[in-house]
Image (cartoon, rainbow, N blue to C red; front, side):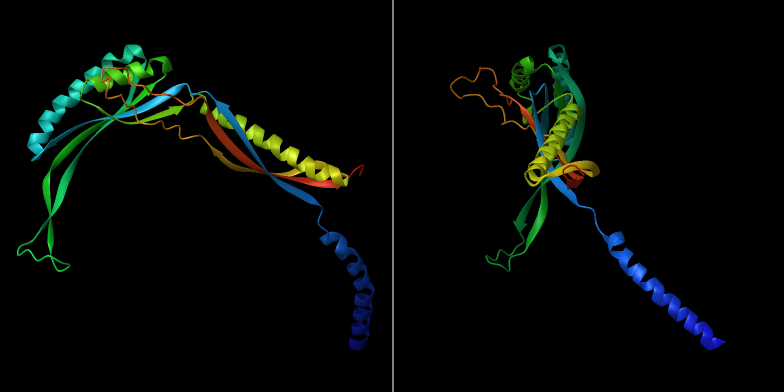
Length: 252
Protein backbone atom coordinates (compact mmCIF):
# COMPACT_ATOMS: atom_id res chain seq x y z
CA UNK A 1 0.00 0.00 0.00
CA UNK A 2 2.82 2.36 0.89
CA UNK A 3 4.59 1.73 -2.45
CA UNK A 4 1.37 2.33 -4.36
CA UNK A 5 0.84 5.75 -2.69
CA UNK A 6 4.45 6.70 -3.40
CA UNK A 7 4.11 5.87 -7.12
CA UNK A 8 0.85 7.84 -7.41
CA UNK A 9 2.49 10.92 -5.83
CA UNK A 10 5.53 10.56 -8.09
CA UNK A 11 3.48 10.43 -11.32
CA UNK A 12 1.31 13.35 -10.16
CA UNK A 13 4.37 15.52 -9.62
CA UNK A 14 5.82 14.50 -12.97
CA UNK A 15 2.62 15.62 -14.72
CA UNK A 16 2.31 18.96 -12.89
CA UNK A 17 5.94 20.07 -13.18
CA UNK A 18 5.94 20.83 -16.95
CA UNK A 19 2.76 22.89 -16.57
CA UNK A 20 4.38 25.00 -13.81
CA UNK A 21 7.52 25.41 -15.87
CA UNK A 22 5.49 26.83 -18.76
CA UNK A 23 3.50 29.30 -16.66
CA UNK A 24 6.35 30.55 -14.46
CA UNK A 25 8.06 32.80 -17.06
CA UNK A 26 4.76 34.56 -17.81
CA UNK A 27 4.11 35.23 -14.14
CA UNK A 28 7.61 36.56 -13.58
CA UNK A 29 7.66 38.63 -16.74
CA UNK A 30 7.96 42.37 -15.95
CA UNK A 31 5.96 44.88 -17.97
CA UNK A 32 8.08 47.53 -19.73
CA UNK A 33 8.27 50.80 -17.78
CA UNK A 34 9.92 54.17 -18.28
CA UNK A 35 10.89 56.53 -15.44
CA UNK A 36 11.83 60.13 -16.16
CA UNK A 37 13.02 62.95 -13.90
CA UNK A 38 11.27 66.19 -14.78
CA UNK A 39 12.47 69.62 -13.71
CA UNK A 40 10.57 72.87 -13.79
CA UNK A 41 10.85 76.48 -12.71
CA UNK A 42 8.56 79.44 -12.30
CA UNK A 43 9.64 83.07 -12.04
CA UNK A 44 7.69 85.64 -10.05
CA UNK A 45 8.30 89.29 -9.30
CA UNK A 46 8.89 89.80 -5.54
CA UNK A 47 6.13 91.65 -3.74
CA UNK A 48 7.32 91.35 -0.12
CA UNK A 49 10.47 92.30 1.78
CA UNK A 50 11.55 91.03 5.18
CA UNK A 51 14.16 93.09 7.01
CA UNK A 52 16.04 92.12 10.19
CA UNK A 53 17.38 95.01 12.28
CA UNK A 54 19.05 95.04 15.70
CA UNK A 55 19.62 97.47 18.53
CA UNK A 56 22.70 96.74 20.69
CA UNK A 57 24.09 98.18 23.93
CA UNK A 58 27.43 97.30 25.53
CA UNK A 59 28.60 97.63 29.12
CA UNK A 60 30.96 96.26 31.71
CA UNK A 61 28.24 94.92 34.01
CA UNK A 62 24.70 93.67 33.59
CA UNK A 63 23.39 96.72 35.45
CA UNK A 64 25.22 99.08 33.11
CA UNK A 65 23.68 97.32 30.10
CA UNK A 66 20.07 96.53 30.97
CA UNK A 67 18.68 99.97 31.82
CA UNK A 68 20.33 101.90 28.95
CA UNK A 69 19.36 99.17 26.51
CA UNK A 70 15.76 99.18 27.66
CA UNK A 71 15.63 102.90 26.92
CA UNK A 72 17.21 102.46 23.48
CA UNK A 73 14.94 99.57 22.57
CA UNK A 74 11.85 101.54 23.64
CA UNK A 75 12.86 104.47 21.45
CA UNK A 76 13.56 102.09 18.59
CA UNK A 77 10.13 100.51 18.91
CA UNK A 78 8.44 103.92 18.77
CA UNK A 79 10.35 104.73 15.57
CA UNK A 80 9.19 101.49 13.97
CA UNK A 81 5.61 102.03 15.08
CA UNK A 82 5.73 105.47 13.49
CA UNK A 83 6.60 103.86 10.16
CA UNK A 84 3.58 101.57 10.11
CA UNK A 85 1.64 104.13 8.07
CA UNK A 86 4.17 103.58 5.25
CA UNK A 87 3.47 99.84 5.16
CA UNK A 88 5.87 98.53 7.81
CA UNK A 89 4.74 95.62 10.00
CA UNK A 90 6.62 94.46 13.10
CA UNK A 91 6.36 90.66 13.00
CA UNK A 92 8.30 89.85 16.17
CA UNK A 93 11.13 90.97 18.42
CA UNK A 94 13.70 89.11 20.46
CA UNK A 95 15.91 90.20 23.35
CA UNK A 96 19.09 88.55 24.61
CA UNK A 97 22.23 89.34 26.61
CA UNK A 98 25.58 87.84 25.65
CA UNK A 99 28.84 87.78 27.54
CA UNK A 100 31.90 89.26 25.89
CA UNK A 101 34.83 87.05 26.81
CA UNK A 102 38.56 87.43 26.33
CA UNK A 103 41.47 85.04 26.88
CA UNK A 104 44.33 86.33 29.03
CA UNK A 105 47.60 84.56 29.91
CA UNK A 106 47.93 83.22 33.45
CA UNK A 107 51.12 84.48 35.16
CA UNK A 108 53.90 83.75 34.89
CA UNK A 109 53.83 84.63 31.20
CA UNK A 110 55.68 81.97 29.26
CA UNK A 111 55.63 82.52 25.49
CA UNK A 112 55.06 79.26 23.64
CA UNK A 113 52.71 76.29 23.63
CA UNK A 114 53.08 75.75 27.39
CA UNK A 115 51.40 79.06 28.29
CA UNK A 116 48.07 78.72 30.13
CA UNK A 117 45.12 81.08 29.58
CA UNK A 118 41.99 81.98 31.50
CA UNK A 119 38.66 82.89 29.87
CA UNK A 120 37.43 86.09 31.51
CA UNK A 121 34.17 88.03 31.12
CA UNK A 122 35.13 91.42 29.72
CA UNK A 123 31.60 92.81 29.49
CA UNK A 124 28.06 92.26 28.22
CA UNK A 125 26.14 93.05 25.04
CA UNK A 126 22.36 93.40 25.06
CA UNK A 127 20.66 92.91 21.70
CA UNK A 128 17.06 93.37 20.59
CA UNK A 129 16.27 92.01 17.14
CA UNK A 130 13.21 93.22 15.22
CA UNK A 131 11.82 91.18 12.33
CA UNK A 132 10.06 93.54 9.92
CA UNK A 133 7.77 92.90 6.98
CA UNK A 134 7.28 95.46 4.21
CA UNK A 135 4.59 94.78 1.65
CA UNK A 136 4.73 98.26 0.09
CA UNK A 137 7.74 97.65 -2.12
CA UNK A 138 7.73 101.22 -3.42
CA UNK A 139 8.28 102.44 0.16
CA UNK A 140 11.10 100.01 1.00
CA UNK A 141 14.03 102.39 0.52
CA UNK A 142 12.24 105.22 2.30
CA UNK A 143 11.49 103.01 5.31
CA UNK A 144 15.01 101.59 5.58
CA UNK A 145 16.47 105.09 5.24
CA UNK A 146 14.38 106.38 8.16
CA UNK A 147 15.41 103.34 10.21
CA UNK A 148 19.12 103.89 9.62
CA UNK A 149 18.84 107.67 10.15
CA UNK A 150 17.84 107.07 13.77
CA UNK A 151 21.38 105.85 14.58
CA UNK A 152 19.81 103.17 16.76
CA UNK A 153 19.54 100.28 14.34
CA UNK A 154 21.88 98.07 12.40
CA UNK A 155 20.36 96.43 9.31
CA UNK A 156 21.38 92.77 9.26
CA UNK A 157 19.54 91.31 6.30
CA UNK A 158 17.01 92.08 3.59
CA UNK A 159 15.13 89.18 2.06
CA UNK A 160 12.68 89.33 -0.83
CA UNK A 161 9.75 86.94 -1.13
CA UNK A 162 6.36 86.58 -2.77
CA UNK A 163 3.08 86.56 -0.87
CA UNK A 164 1.67 83.61 -2.83
CA UNK A 165 4.72 81.37 -2.37
CA UNK A 166 2.77 78.11 -2.43
CA UNK A 167 1.12 79.07 -5.71
CA UNK A 168 4.53 79.80 -7.23
CA UNK A 169 5.87 76.41 -6.07
CA UNK A 170 2.86 74.63 -7.57
CA UNK A 171 3.47 76.37 -10.90
CA UNK A 172 7.05 75.06 -10.80
CA UNK A 173 5.68 71.57 -10.09
CA UNK A 174 3.38 71.82 -13.13
CA UNK A 175 6.35 72.79 -15.26
CA UNK A 176 8.29 69.80 -13.91
CA UNK A 177 5.43 67.43 -14.81
CA UNK A 178 5.23 68.81 -18.35
CA UNK A 179 9.01 68.48 -18.67
CA UNK A 180 8.83 64.83 -17.58
CA UNK A 181 6.16 64.08 -20.19
CA UNK A 182 8.11 65.87 -22.92
CA UNK A 183 11.23 63.85 -22.12
CA UNK A 184 9.31 60.57 -22.03
CA UNK A 185 7.78 61.27 -25.45
CA UNK A 186 11.22 62.14 -26.81
CA UNK A 187 12.43 58.69 -25.75
CA UNK A 188 9.36 56.75 -26.82
CA UNK A 189 8.34 58.16 -30.21
CA UNK A 190 11.54 57.47 -32.20
CA UNK A 191 11.26 53.74 -31.40
CA UNK A 192 7.48 53.48 -31.99
CA UNK A 193 6.52 53.22 -28.35
CA UNK A 194 3.50 54.74 -26.66
CA UNK A 195 3.06 56.08 -23.15
CA UNK A 196 0.25 54.25 -21.42
CA UNK A 197 -1.02 54.89 -17.90
CA UNK A 198 1.16 56.45 -15.23
CA UNK A 199 2.34 53.85 -12.71
CA UNK A 200 3.93 56.14 -10.12
CA UNK A 201 4.60 59.81 -9.37
CA UNK A 202 7.24 60.68 -6.78
CA UNK A 203 7.52 64.27 -5.62
CA UNK A 204 11.03 65.63 -5.77
CA UNK A 205 12.50 68.82 -4.35
CA UNK A 206 10.50 72.03 -4.44
CA UNK A 207 12.54 75.06 -3.41
CA UNK A 208 11.79 78.72 -2.93
CA UNK A 209 14.70 81.11 -3.54
CA UNK A 210 16.43 82.60 -0.50
CA UNK A 211 15.91 86.09 -1.94
CA UNK A 212 18.64 87.73 0.14
CA UNK A 213 19.83 91.10 -1.11
CA UNK A 214 23.11 92.90 -0.55
CA UNK A 215 23.25 94.99 2.59
CA UNK A 216 21.97 98.55 2.04
CA UNK A 217 24.77 101.03 1.64
CA UNK A 218 25.11 104.78 1.11
CA UNK A 219 27.86 106.51 -0.77
CA UNK A 220 30.34 108.34 1.44
CA UNK A 221 30.09 111.39 -0.84
CA UNK A 222 26.35 111.74 -0.16
CA UNK A 223 25.59 110.53 3.37
CA UNK A 224 22.13 112.13 3.33
CA UNK A 225 20.99 110.26 0.25
CA UNK A 226 18.33 107.58 0.37
CA UNK A 227 19.43 104.03 1.01
CA UNK A 228 19.23 102.10 -2.24
CA UNK A 229 18.09 98.48 -2.05
CA UNK A 230 17.53 96.97 -5.49
CA UNK A 231 15.23 93.94 -5.42
CA UNK A 232 15.78 91.16 -7.96
CA UNK A 233 13.65 91.45 -11.08
CA UNK A 234 12.20 87.98 -10.44
CA UNK A 235 12.50 85.14 -7.96
CA UNK A 236 12.98 81.66 -9.42
CA UNK A 237 11.10 78.73 -7.87
CA UNK A 238 12.31 75.23 -8.76
CA UNK A 239 10.71 71.80 -8.52
CA UNK A 240 11.37 68.24 -9.68
CA UNK A 241 9.31 65.07 -10.06
CA UNK A 242 9.90 61.41 -10.97
CA UNK A 243 7.21 59.93 -13.22
CA UNK A 244 6.93 56.27 -14.26
CA UNK A 245 4.86 55.25 -17.31
CA UNK A 246 3.90 51.86 -18.63
CA UNK A 247 5.03 51.72 -22.25
CA UNK A 248 4.00 49.49 -25.14
CA UNK A 249 4.56 49.23 -28.91
CA UNK A 250 2.44 51.70 -30.83
CA UNK A 251 -1.06 50.38 -31.49
CA UNK A 252 -1.03 47.72 -28.72
